[in-house]
Image (cartoon, rainbow, N blue to C red; front, side, top):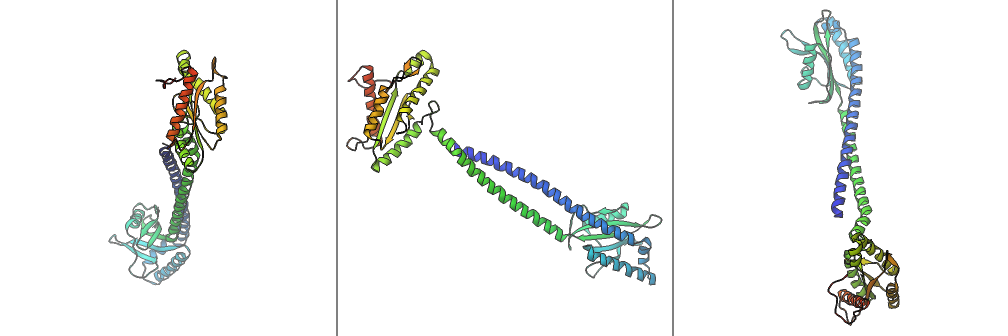
Length: 382
């Protein structure tokens, strides 16, 4: 019962902690990602503004010129784009135009490698076409994975005096390092959070186990009516007593049977009968302590097991209990039959034999109190 309840409590606690941790991590992840993306956008827009202020419509129109003016323009723009690429962490920076056949071509670029003119593909091409079609700036919706790494893109159209689009400037920012750093930070955060969750869950489980163990142990071994230890505790103590006897220790057992309980129940009701039994148990505990504990082993039967208690002390305890007459409920004085037996190797083989002799002595005392000496055991106990 205890283990099952502890496990359920631990599972509920673990799921709660995990849900809270996941929620907090989700919020932190979202805030961190948005902050990172806002920083990238801010830097990208700064570079875009610089290029837009230094790249005129005339420049783009002269790019296709085959004369000296076109050559000078291409050289100047190429120098500017190359410098920006170095300081702005730009992977690709290019100008895309549409030829007479409606096909895209790169009219100017600053790229990290030679080869065919670079034209973006996939999601980047979608953003490029949108910028051409709608004549608006299109900023990347997030970080794109491409064949040359992770990039963040900005496309914006260039319009002539007639508001006709003559080209699109494209920038692909290299965010591989930022992305990897961000992912590592998140991975370390997840690992650390997981380790902390496991650590504190183990601590919580051990704490719950230790905190609840005394309670459940007491609950399992306590008689709820009288507060004494119950039959289960008595049986365990009986086994321990047998072991102690085997080690050479004297073991004495005392059995008590409460008198008049049936009379109290019949005339005053079971509620008062419970009070009578409780109060009688309190008196027995007072006389037995600290020599031993009192166990309720039946309806109106109690017992105690005394280890290494001198037989003279045992007799004194019995005499005091038999002489006890204080009232325990209204006009009912304390009254119980007592019997005791000490383990004797010539008479007993096990602790059960000691129990039987103590029980028989208790019945003999009960018969004497009823004034019927010499008779057999009564058919029922009060």
